Amino acid sequence: MNVIGAKTLLQKEVRRFLRVPGQTVLQPLISTTLYFVVFGYTLGGRQQDVDGVSYVSFIVPGLVFLGIANNAFLNASSSFFITKIQGTIVDLLVAPLGPTELLIGFVAGAMVRGLLVGLLTWAAALVFTGAHLVHPLTTLLFLGLSAYVFSVLGLVAGIWAEKFEQINFFPTFLMLPLTFLGGVFYSVHSLPEPFRTISLFNPVVHMVEGLRAGMLGLDEGSPLGLGLLVGLAVLATVVAHRMLAVGYRVKS
Image 1 (cartoon, rainbow, N blue to C red):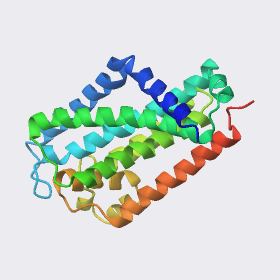
Image 2: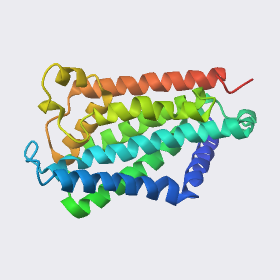
Image 3: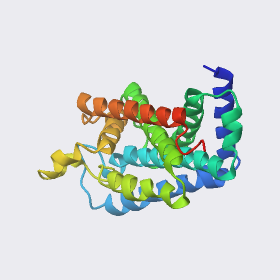
Image 4: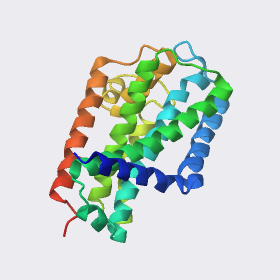
């Protein structure tokens, strides 16, 4: 394990997105905050309280998740893909970095960006809704787990993609439907059957509900959902590590 190499790659990834903070941090922060303003205050006045909390407060954990998931995925996928397109991947291949160090460097860098945007979104929402943090450890667990899962999935997408269009495949045809059907703006428990049961197979549902359980104290998280997310994280990690180990679409 090359600790110095992994740390150096992490620092390089963080500096990369901090060079253009307007694009990588401020722009997604504004976009997510607009969701809060539009949905929270446009629909909030017509929507009754959800599970004992105001609708404006109810959607905050979902919007924090949106900021984390989108930016963690995009950072990992675009960063690795650009290294392939520009040919700088050769520098990483000749360096004393194995698949473990590459995985840690790219994933940790993406997690930093995702968590940064998510926490800034949360801070912006607190100005309007006030502070809500009932279970800090649960909140921290699901914040980190959400950031990690989408960072690894982004790395897998970056390794797999050979064209820019393929990078956009996952956010457009997979992440977007799962996110908007994942209870970000509504409670999945209000859905009629069989849609309520079907929604439980959506991992986004468990990430959002876990954050609501931690931030608002809503008893919506479940051990089964947590197990599903841990299983997804392990599976994605194994796939990403294997792709890096064999040089899939990296080594000619």
